[in-house]
Image 1 (cartoon, rainbow, N blue to C red):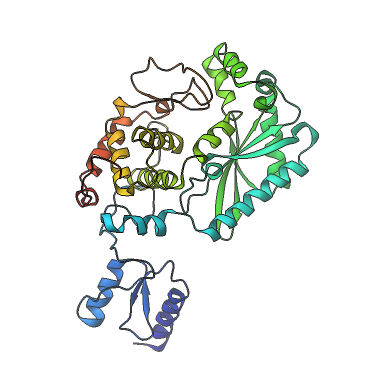
Image 2: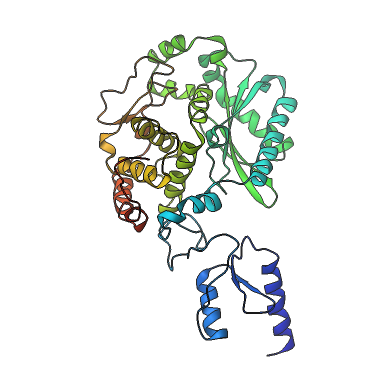
Length: 388
């Protein structure tokens, strides 16, 4: 083999040794060691170089990536749940789903800088009284490697939703200019209710939805707000969503850590088992899945130290039979306005919002859940009648 070819190969393997998190599979027979991104690459190396397969050593745990991944939005090197056994599930969640401390701190610092920019540099017309983190970031249910954030900007000069609604288009246009010109953001676009930006963080980017709103919870009782919503049109009620986001954050963030782990597991399942939503097919977003997990956990008696595999099984079973779902909470209001729907999961912050309706393909999601319930993961988990 030519010398330059050897030098090129050695440089490649030196790079891989310097990045063990990406190149997990190690051939210890070779000196110096050689690392591979996929188990099938190592297996091919073993056959060609050593004449037989040699057990892989990784820096984490010994499960094999499937030879082919289901159609999904993740890259070909992303692990899936399909090949995980019941005994490996907890470690898989820890290694692949739970965000690590360093990553969390890095993401938090970037988002905090954006919040500080808006609080200190927006002109008077856009001056926030407060910026609140909502979405998965605010609730503590973010999945590793998926760091989208929602920031609710409560504008100091607006106290009513009608006033905000009348001025929202102009507010969004002004925010877009200031974020793109002075905020160090890449502005991706504007929706009816938000400015969408991305910010860079150590080689990866964060998508952030910035939602201007009025802090109506500060100036009105919840009963008064819901009475006002009752007299509004369905389209006008959509403007209240950002204003009520703190109630969503309080509700989800208040559940035990183990329930948040199960929420992340269900969100990872959704992320790896489906193509991303298109204009015609709208898959369930994170929030309905969070609420389904919480509702099923509560119906099971709120077990504090449940078996994660069993909890996963029962939530998937509930999704498979989604037409039987009827979850609602009275933590912020006494009665909801969707109880006549065939099935519902009602937003604890909004009695008019059946979050199930945002998805238009529950039959497809349910079929995938039914298929997944037949995986070896659950056949290896004894006594699936309960959660404990």
